[in-house]
Length: 487
Image 1 (cartoon, one colour):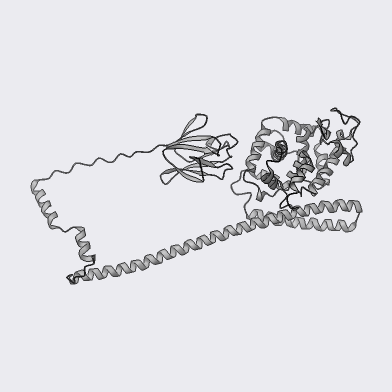
Image 2: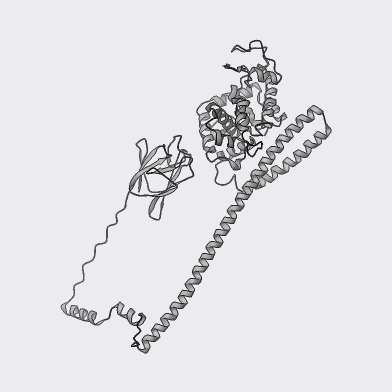
């Protein structure tokens, strides 16, 4: 039996395999930041209790040493992360009492003497071993003994040959099995590499398509329109190739829950390659989903959007600019879809309206800024408060970020929109101008310490709202997918 003491003093006993983690499915559920959703497994194997790390973000530590797998014995402490919560364990040893020896049977003295005489007269086993199989070279062995020795030597020789063949076959089988496993592993890695290459080629083509369309609108060129149609056909073929790669790799069927599959699909729609998704990204998204679940805010905003008729115009504006319609959730985070929203004063001016344009950006995209632009009040003469005009302007603004420095990474677009495209662009311009290198995965891997917490929170809040919106009832919300008719 395994005894576990939790950080809160709770004592648990286990006689079967258990999982430690932050998720409610875990038998030992610890909801702390350092703990991954599925952090480690405790299991009984070969007569011992073991612990194994489930590729957690922060690891498991025993006696200050990070371990992947270890035997638990006696008492000790398991720490989840170098500075995370500690669990005390005690392995209960089962003591097996030796059987009580039965008393020797009674016997007569005559029998005792007979037995003793027999034992004295009977040669022991070592005698026969030396007589028949010993290296006796004095030539005194009889004919019978020599025949036994020759027969034994012949049998031993055949056994050595047989055992040698068996060992050789086992070694060969191990080599073949290892080679096959290595080959399959290398093939999977190659397929993943090719799938990622196809994905980022699609992203680059998507950027070209948007630029071609904008150029065609300016020049009203038939040749440009023909190029657009050809690019669309090529993009469709690439999408089919990518889907085949993803299916062959079982990306969406390798034991993932429906919630995890939705997270991966939404990442894909926002222009992030789900094949290269960081290991702890799903855990982080799950935490932000719990934040949305802790209030009625999202439900109220969606109800307002349905009541005011905001959803379809926003979807149409995004579709017109060839943008992911999931950007619908950006103004949800910006203003709760309130066209009268007014932000606090900043050195860039006061942001106003549903899309929270600052004055300079609003004017850049054709919106008239009202006379009360320097006052934190609603200004009826300010077109930032005009739902239709500001939505069209926002779609063009998002398109420009999407097709230039963000390189079709929807999550980088969000970071730019919140943090100011000039500031975030300084960081992403350190990456090559290629969708393979310029994406949100790269940004948070290299510059997490430089991205403000507000911006990090902003991106994950929008992303998780989009995840919830795909199947609200699955995540415990009481509204339907607001974008269902457009997808």
